[in-house]
Image 1: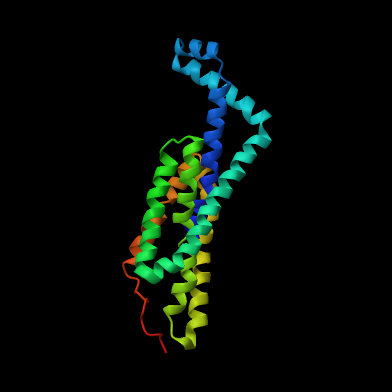
Image 2 (image 1 turned 45 degrees about the horizontal axis):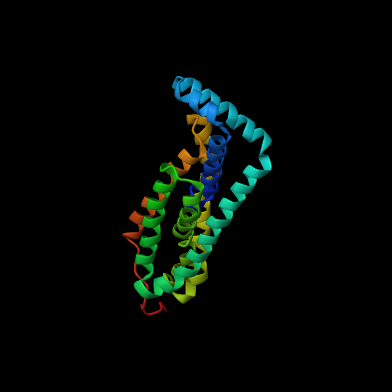
Length: 217
């Protein structure tokens, strides 16, 4: 949950920002582009900043459409990841599957939040990111019940789910606090919080494998 609220949900902002940047570039006429090549960087930045402000003010619905489309294709990839977790963990084991998704989620987040991409490239990158960052959530319902004997299975599973929610809750508030305190954008915060995937990998070092194990009495 911490990685979902800390990183996964910000993927839509990447496509939105890329679309805005392309709209800015497309709005610069040939004469303006020629003039900008002969001006100082600061002036160039001012011109682009002015065009960007106009686009943000006059293309609200278009920008929102890009954001929602980013959410759609990320969620589509995430849905496929959720479906894929079951067959994958049955084939290679629960812990290895969690390791695959955690490591893949971290790598894809580092690339997505740090490497500039065109909207065309993001059409492929966002579903992959969604697949790797959301797919692991299907595994909890498989893995947690297998950790406990039948007499306390419901209690143990419920504790794992709800304790996780309580621990992850501060992430909802920390994102906004970090942006305000350090004056950074949401994508920078998402990049930083993506290191939570590595914490998950460390926890998995102590996680028992339950595939093909006898059910606890």
